[in-house]
Amino acid sequence: MVGLQSLKTSPQIKFKAAFKEWNSVIEALGSGEQIIILRKGGIIEDEGDFVPKEKFFFLFPTKTHEKPELLKKTFPQDNVGENEIKIKYWAEVVLARKIKNKEILKKIDDFHIWKYEVVDERFHRWQNDEVWALIVRVFKLKNPVIINNHPDYSGCKSWIEINDEIDITQSEPVLSDEEFEKKFKILKEILEE
Image 1 (tube, rainbow, N blue to C red):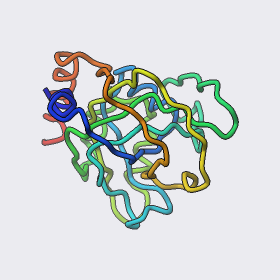
Image 2: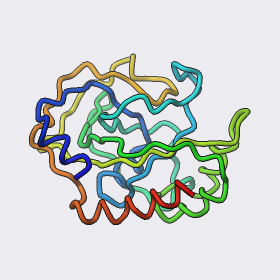
Image 3: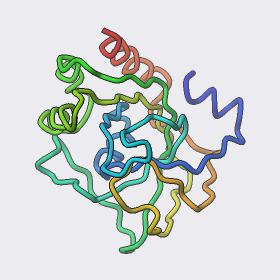
Image 4: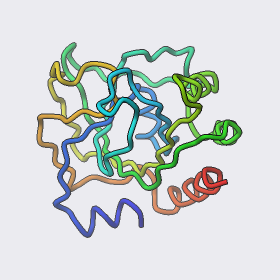
């Protein structure tokens, strides 16, 4: 099975990459409600635009730009200190596709918690009408880790490298193989139209 097989065959998988996303979206991913990430890119992306360069990454919750009116549903923030971040999940990219057809955005609207206006704005932002879609298998850490929010983690960028070592060996998938496969097949079919 995607994701689980990687963990079973290589329990020594180690990575420091983290993907910054709104807290509510991370909780939707962590609950299994959502298995897709849509991204255009932050203002200060290293390559100038978003690139799905990592296969494995931690989900790094942010409060920056998240507003209840931009989401169909919100989740509460974790109760941590002002300069702390709680890492609870990691993900493996199962499929990455660039969406250039706006009709596909409409078809996947039920598969995420962003309001359509947010996705539409991302699609049309800057010069090109497109957005990246990442289908991810999400895993919950057995023991969530609280890390210090380092200055290197700030700014409008998708990818960061965290300084802390985080053990993923006893992680559990947030969805069963069957649940994930069902959602994956539907989304894959839509994205490949």
